[in-house]
Length: 259
Image 1 (cartoon, rainbow, N blue to C red):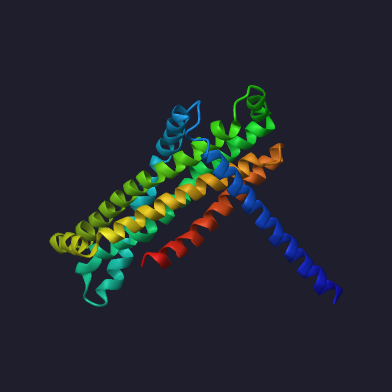
Image 2 (cartoon, rainbow, N blue to C red):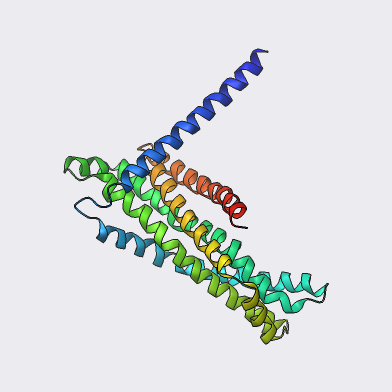
């Protein structure tokens, strides 16, 4: 009986700790974003972060999009050929990439490449007391460090996802038409007929939501990291894991609303 009570006690403390951290992250991010219109305006730092996050992630996004489109073409053709529906390959690739795989895989790649860097960078600032130095100089670290990175991730990810979608569909076309022999006219015609504005909007909404989620989680964990080298390492790992799980959970929620 004592062991059962102890187990429920640990679960309760863990749950309360999770709720407390969720509230802290919400408070920190909302307070940081509320500083956007205040002076001095951080537009220059937002642009710098957009460049660092976006340009630095172009290669991994392009490669992931290309191989995703090629794999979808191979697997889709194998499945559709059993039903004599090879002409639907273009529509299947486009819908899968635009609605699901583009936003989710693109966000995962951004988390692995840029999200981890954001957390590590802010954590190192905490270790080297750069954040304390900003406060001593009357510079709000939330406005200088957190807010630009959240906004940059939110703005950049939709653009990266658009690139992912275009490259993925182009790679799927090359494999489907040039390698597997699908009729090019049918491939393009079915893609145009089946992909609607609603599908495109769904992908854009997911991209914006995922970018905001990555920005909030990675900046928060880095800002609250234990100021040691070991603490920064743990914080970086935790940021990638939590962001990845959060992306999958949010994807399910958004998909259920935008079917």
